[in-house]
Image (cartoon, rainbow, N blue to C red; front, side, top):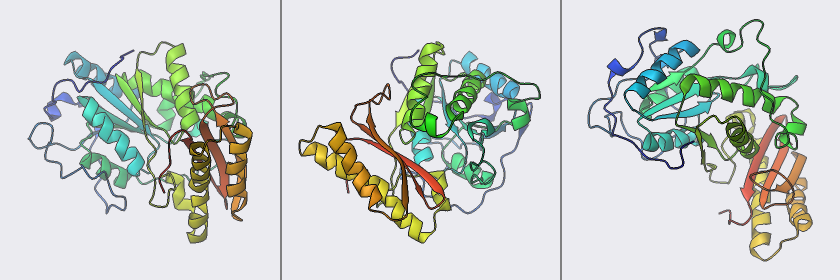
Amino acid sequence: MPKTCGTGNSRAPSTSTRPTAQLRPPRGPRELSAKPPSSWGKRTGKRSGTAVSAPAVIETPGAMLHASRRWRSERRSIGLVPTMGALHAGHLSLVELARRENDVVVVSVFVNPIQFGPGEDFARYPRDPDRDARLLGEGEVDAIYEPRTELMYPPGASTRVHVGGIAEPLEGKARPGHFEGVATVVTKLLAAVEPDRAYFGQKDAQQVAVVKRLVRDLDLGVEIRVGPIVREEDGLALSSRNVYLDPAERKAAASLSDALRDAARAYAAGERDPVRLRAVLVARLRAEPLADLEYAELVDAATFEKPGTLAVIAARIGKTRLIDNHDLSIPLPG
């Protein structure tokens, strides 16, 4: 597994390095409603000074593997940003990080059915592929890996990847089978893309810990890079599911970050008792009438065992389930 992150040689974008089989042109652009990172500009090829072509759209695992092996034959480093689409500034910050650290950037867009449980929001999960393609084009992404479900999970497919221990509490308990679905799809994405580095957001802290354990235990040879949580001005962590919130719920959703901020202030004031710190989290969330607290705990960020300084919370605001987390040893602005 790589131990350090280097940028490699400056890439010279060219359509000749992309596979020609089983590709389709990116969809036409639509008006953007999300603001990309401030360092992004027009697609003028910042890394080479030349025009940058639109990213290829790759739809099959075989075509993706063919492309990645061609890039590797050219000694180009590859960064993968796995997403389920409905991109926001949090995703785009991961793309920007990957762009700085790799010669080639691949973003996967796949709403993974097997990580959703019965009664969850798979059918209504936000999908806006035209807008996603536009954002990724502006981000100088080389390829969008958008595999079809029937190819990811063909008829008769029965293999699942199970991560024990770390995947069992909290999100694992609240969403049975969720992390098995995550571990399976991540394994398949890594197999197809063969990246040097894969990028995940800290907002899904337990997912990060599960993926790190998966990569370590199976010797997958990819470096897992973690980007910080991106928040709205009032502290709400960016999430594709935030679009479900009505105005009153949107205001109430800030109670999650408010609770984390209160606990971080208590920690900064000298409080170290995990029971009392947890009580701070719970008190703030229970003071919000629209919040239905599911869990609030302090855990170790690497093992997800108690106690620790990572405060993790899950709550429903109306019908929308939101999660957030913060290391209490670090002040949370606001």
